[in-house]
Image (cartoon, rainbow, N blue to C red; front, side):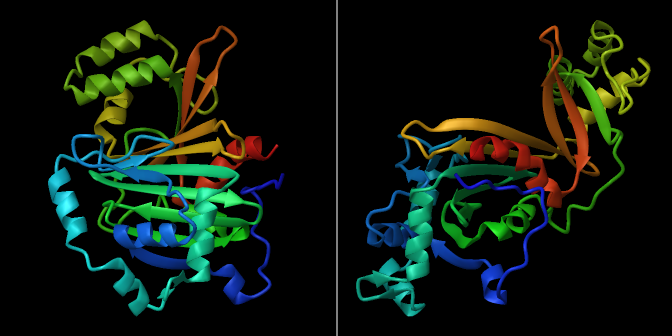
Length: 309
């Protein structure tokens, strides 16, 4: 099985074209038509009618929900005939679709590795499906379930593609954060603190701190002074304005195996990766580390290494 190491530098491509991902924007009807013409290749999500399930349901994770299912279906129904729009762009000639499109959709349907991405920033959700096999990767992404970006490229370009996922909109300027670049604390405390902050129960933070005396530690493993902990916990809940979740699965067998998950949280000054770990006594703790958008590939490398081993 091919080993994919995203932590190493990308090898030099043999030509400029080899290094450039090909991208095509497709409406949902166009995407479904392409899949049908590619031998009936299944897409990585299911479209269902209102009342049955969310309008866009992922096969590996929970997808975006919507309270406007009827408006969504109306928008899809108003789109032009997919055969005409694809033919106009030269992507459909007679009954034959573009070879690149057919290959990309085929790879989405028959991969070895599956990487599922769910990003929410200030109420805007983007879902992306990355599928890899051998030396090729195909991706599909959407923010509304109506227009999709389909892309395909060699695995050498995958780190750069992953780096696009966490890039924040220009209008979301970073601010000073009250949360340090590194914290290590019990998962139970982090979860309870975020829930208390979101519920406006900041009065509970001092109680939670007392229950976990000395449990919040800095980069050097030293306990954070108890007087500072409630403020840190409150900032952790109050500053959160987005999340990024990546699920990695081995789909090469009949039974899909989820190998690992990476989760990030967006605070005032940028992303933090959340890395759970366990102590000898069974206690679950979580590290919060500052991380850049371009570091997603390196952060996922250990998880993908488990799939490729």
